[in-house]
Image (cartoon, rainbow, N blue to C red; front, side):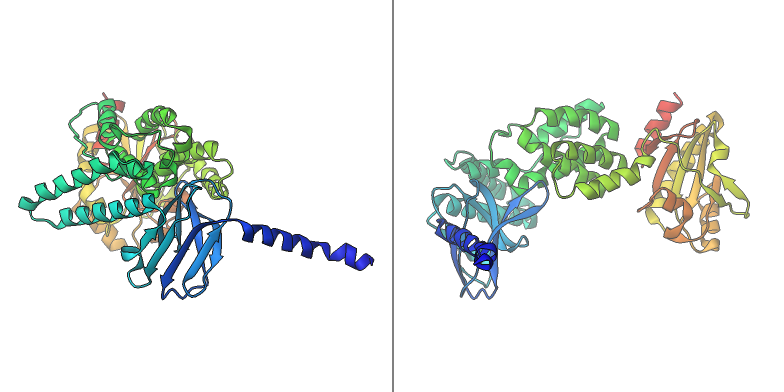
Length: 433
């Protein structure tokens, strides 16, 4: 008796829960001819990643997804890479019908006028943009007119999903005519977001919102200094609906990672964690912040001790009192070699005023390194242990791509990173007016 009462009750509880799940109404059903998989899933978009919500078994291509989930935008599919968007409103259960051959290009929705309208719009607009990219110049105007017509119709749709996509599918038109930094920011903001309807609750749930955020930040970072992006970006994000803050900051984190702008990655990572403290990516972001934090602006620059071209040991710390540009480069790096004439010009202009360059080569071939120094007329300090990417200096500064620079102030603290071209010249003009 004790055995029955003490150990069998979890079985009854399991049966009770299973029965409850099975009694819930279907939220999405489908018949996909030729689909030979075990299960299908529903995913929710969470600021740059898909999170699995519920799943269902597939039987001869048929499935029925059941569960209690909030209304909104989701993705149905075998995986996030093999699926498509569906809008669930809690009132109707859309039915997917199609064949496995070219499924995502040919399937249809039944029992949901919103999903069918959204599907037809997305297919039409994607097709139009593809034709525009391949069109001859004399054909582009007419195709653009058809795109504008599709967007205007979607904007007036009774369905909020189409209204959201009517803005997300608009091509930004940056002007790039402004001269000062703030005007450049405002120009870019208008190009991407002018007239944007931020109050649409579906926006945080759509991957296209995140992708537009990424593109916005990438364009901003290409024309505006990092610290200005932080200043204007923080004020701008603060005006957005709270539900979009995580999307905005993760978009900036991703964009700055593509440009290897670790200072902005740190800034965006901290902002993201402040609005999404329970995100499963938290441990990785915190580890990054901990490791990279010692290389932030204002931190002491780690000392580099390496042999120069004659084998003499040179130390970065011996240059205290000067503004020092640590220049990570290599003879085989074409972008580095293309940048060298600009660096030579600036070195000649400012070396007498307290500017020095500490070149750290990621070469492995000694003769190639020395030949590049002679050919490019690089007359500053050069060091290398000829270990390529395993260079002690590169490891110390976590260099993942070159050319890469770190500007160190006279007190030996990191002042800026990633300066080159116009940004380097502007910084030196600021230091040496």
